Length: 136
Image (cartoon, rainbow, N blue to C red):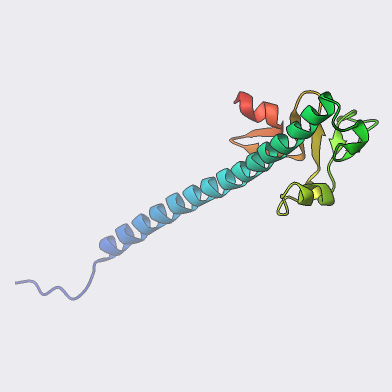
């Protein structure tokens, strides 16, 4: 009878290959999950901002508040001309303390659209507006 005293080189190579494959799959899945989580967080923030600002737009439409009472600073030029840029104080007032003003959230009170100035990429597509996300 043959006396086995350990694992063969082939067995060791197969084990290492299997571990590398498992590691690669795990890393890929983790990266996709993290990207999806970030995308969904931004989308949720945009939806929350939309719901809060829609109430204000409705109040303005019925004359309960004036344009000066709308949250944000109205932009007079650029891509988001006529939209309102929200400050950190505006976001905090909406209950979105985790959202950061430096990410530039814009509100269009006329069509209830919200924009994320820095954009968010998901599945190779960069989104800036909530209306773009809702289309896909």
